[in-house]
Length: 204
Image (tube, rainbow, N blue to C red; front, side, top):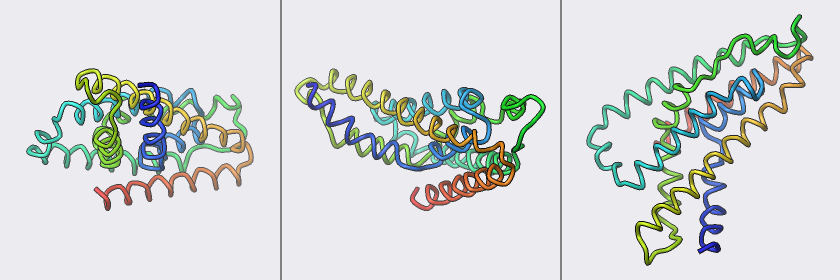
């Protein structure tokens, strides 16, 4: 059982942790505003991913497919928020401020509900989680236990990879004291964020 769990986690890490709208937005927020200020957004992303996992595990995806308009509305809202987020990241204050690093934290852009909504509307999440969930078993002879173990393992992966992306982005925050470097980093992350959404929509 432990071996099968580790295999599942090993398979899930590259799929769920690969660049996409959620992971790139976390890295972008970390770079522009720091780790602590993006924590509510991180919690929303993680909970939203767990909601997607629950939808897949319980087979509700068929019901959601019949209510396609709901996903369309969520995706439009998510895209609008991502574009707004990209703009705020690209134009975030850089360089030294009177209050030091906390000067950039005065504006908290990443909040819980947008993170939750983005995860639930993210087509990459359904594709990645669905592929791993359907392709691997931990205890195939016990369906309920298998479902619970896979749910717990994939929820752990979701928390780990998203936290890692936020931490990765926040490592760039210390470079923001140099105005030219800081602006270039913010703009680069904003562009990557927009591109990730374009790719996700094209594949979705």
